[in-house]
Image (tube, rainbow, N blue to C red; front, top):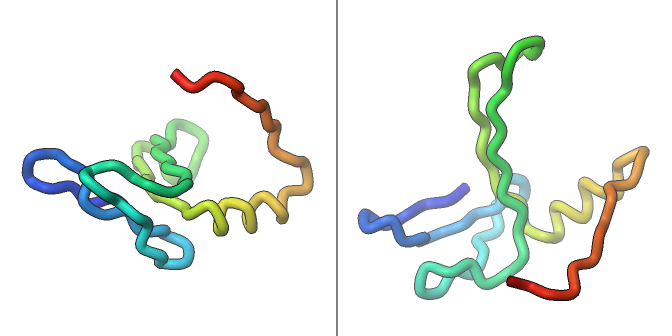
Length: 80
């Protein structure tokens, strides 16, 4: 869950799974997280709904451990 100041600067990020408040300084998220935004379309029970949530790195890792098929992971050596 993200909250922004009136000027659009990031103020707070909270993990939707465990409730942990993540470190934000000067509008920049200072720790690992996964932000998801997905709009459901036809053939789902959520047609037309947009869902948004954030996960801390620990909760993300816990979810991945429960996958029957591992997520694809690609290492990036240069950050732009």
